[in-house]
Amino acid sequence: MDSNGKLNLEETNLNEFIENILYKIKIEAQKKNQKLTFCAGEEKRSIKIDRDKMEQVLLNVVSNAIKYTNLGGYVRVFTKYDDDYAYITISDNGIGIPKKDLPRIFERFYRVDKGRSRELGGTGLGLAIAKEIVTAHGGEINIESEVGIGTIVYIKLKY
Image (cartoon, rainbow, N blue to C red):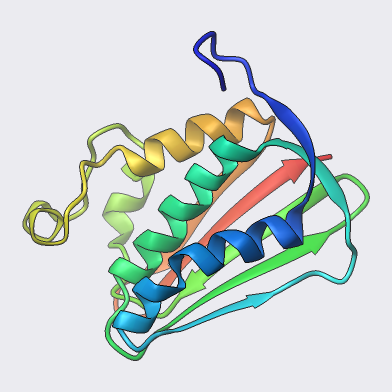
């Protein structure tokens, strides 16, 4: 989105785009001895996205997964395609989010655990901004999580 709020859409190979983003962030996972993997959907579909904005979304979601996953854990990113949508799924075996907090997770400045956020950094804006960007693309973003089990973030983008 430029300063007028318009998306700068470019034809993009989603799998290659995600691989490049994960390359940028893999050092963070390595510092925590985490396994960061990408399972690309077989189809090499292109999608029109604002590359800068969508990179912001993916960096935020994947860095959250790394941040809130313990040493030696995993963060996995998947893509899948059907006739109408591209799906990106980010899953981890991190500390999880309590059920009571899930409905508010995309609110501006909402943080699940104020003490933990102070300790690990974070303003409570990342997921709110991610939702705005995905919605501006005509897509959806959703989260499932269970404390002590992990978190899964689903992003659905229309072609």
